[in-house]
Image 1 (cartoon, rainbow, N blue to C red):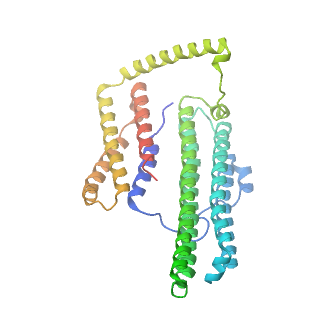
Image 2 (cartoon, rainbow, N blue to C red):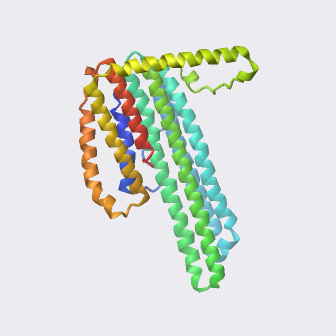
Image 3 (cartoon, rainbow, N blue to C red):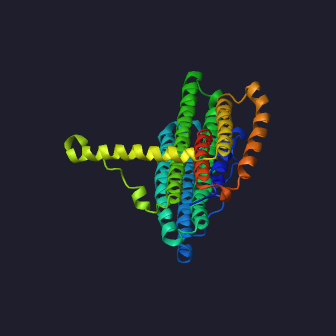
Length: 357
């Protein structure tokens, strides 16, 4: 079942370039473009219905946090004394932002699994292209768009508003009228509380996106192998106590033998890959290893003059490598070559994702 895997690589590269390029554009409000509502979509297209439901959840959750923040601003007021009397309410909003984001991430995973089942139920699974496009639609709508809008609305705008209102607002204004030791402690504590909460929200968003990405790659791999049992794919793993059952031990031995046989088969398949094609793909992967190493170093020290000087050449190599990979005629590859192509591009995408945050 051949598929166009360039999208997977491009998505990972886009993430890593975003890390090099700086912050995403900010938006005012909870979300950008969202579906009008799940009810109207349900009758027309079950797949669009799930996406619409997920998009609405992201938008509604962000708006809820923004509304609660405005309520908190009103209760705290614009005075130093009001802040001191309501520090617990400020912290409560920080905690709410972390908790709501975490719960949203868990729901997003469930939306994804519902969606992938809907793909199996409503798309002709014998049509590789249709299955691929349908699978990518959820990834694009949620991993890319919905999470980006939510990131802008909460991590960027909402926390910036708290920073401007409190740390750089009422607390900064109190500098000239408050004993320095007291002011310094309150000012420092305010920054630490905001910074910790903002960092937690960032981590939760990153974890949520990673979960969506993991499910997406698992589903693509399963569908590629003509395995369309979505429920089994995401079923909890059953732990077997082999010390309590001779039968279980025997099964373990059989599994080991089967695994060895599969490894042998895999080796045979690899041996049938065209040597020139394998060398070409290996060279592409070697470049992306170098690229990921460069991005990791750049993220750790974005002011390094050596890295900045190297960046232009690295981007040129990146563009050339991507152009070469995109020019590969996947339909013209042998089964063994295509399998190796899929294996290498999947590894590249995983490596790029590691530096894409």
